[in-house]
Image (tube, rainbow, N blue to C red; front, side, top):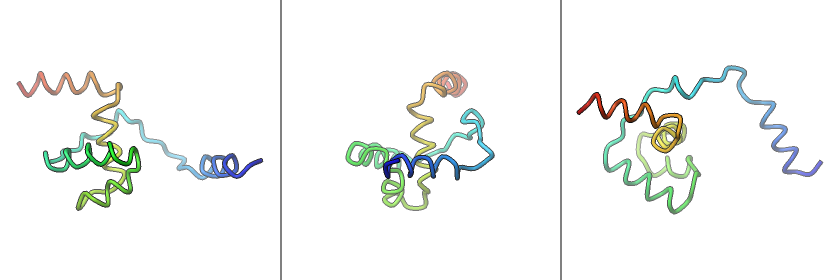
Length: 88
């Protein structure tokens, strides 16, 4: 087994036993400045959430990743539309 496969096997077995459904996530409110910085950093470094979080004061990598998924994930598209209608 090569190194990459061993690493993948190791990380997959050490994962938490409790998984949280992404639908149960609360929406994360970001300021315009934070959103802008996240988008710009994502264009530069991709999904390296820890690196991006290091540039956004007071935010953790998990928050940044969750924010990104909720903005760009198809699972949340209908929920975003519903919130827009409710806020209009």
